[in-house]
Amino acid sequence: MIHARQAKETLTAIEMLHGDTLKFRLRNGSEVPIELLDTGAAIIETNLPLPLAEDRKGRTTYRFWADLRVDGREIRYEREVGTDKSFYEPLTVSGVNIWLDAVDEIFAFILETHGPCRLNPTCKNKPPFYFQARIAVQDATLRICPEPVHPWCPLPEGGLRIEMCYTGEDCWMGAYFGASAHGGLDINHPKGTLLYTPIDIDEQFLVNSVAHGWTNNRWHGIRHWPDHSTWVLRSAHMVKQLVPEHTPVRAGTVYAEGAGVWVGQAEHSHFAFSALDHGSFIRLDPWILFWQMYQDLEA
Image (cartoon, rainbow, N blue to C red; front, side, top):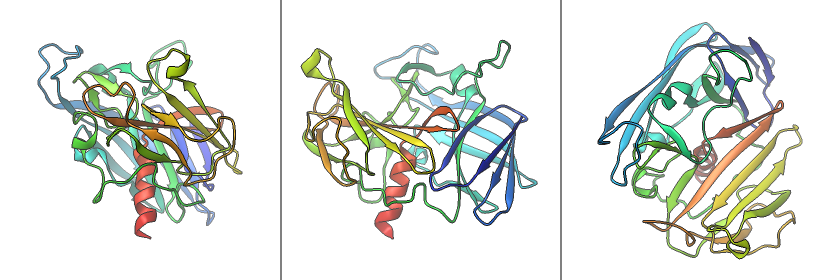
């Protein structure tokens, strides 16, 4: 299948099958074809006594890859999850920044029981039942969005490290208890750490709250961009929300105290990110937002 996309003010998220080609038109008018040739995944290291069985002391790191043909050039794009390499730089080829978010083969050895993060179903009645690669792309001359991204929480100096992610596993799709892909990014910090809106938010509210009988406080913030894409930002383990629900909030506003409800073994806040683009709701690594935060701090 051929997917045609025009570079816009916000990054483009897309899921693909083997043989699909994304024809991505840059702001200068040139078109860069990105073909998905193949994908794969493999465990690097695990101490699980049984495969696909969560263990409180379980640790699993893995790698995955996509073979791409970008503008006629064949490239193997490989990533690691569960190590410091989880916090990666985009691949830049022919003026396009490419973030490789996930491939379906990961779920041969990792469950999805700790937050939704698997690729979307293809809605077809024959295999493969899920898309095989999830990527985000952007014209390399543009940011991921047209406004500065404010730190969502106090940013660790020198960048994120895997040891800061709960017990050293809960980056995006990291192996929670060694066996289940983590549907968010956890960052350890003390109870009461302030959380800030990274971008202007059009609508925000609690989807779960302790006050209504839930074990957690979970917040959703929604932004509708002029380019017709919509982003949904989510955070959890909040102690207290500090702005009235269902009101717009400007970027950089303190909206909550974090890291203090149902935190388990380490006080932390949980972050998640999704984009609705061309009719598809696609989950993405919150690290992409944090990557831009660090870029903006250095600018």
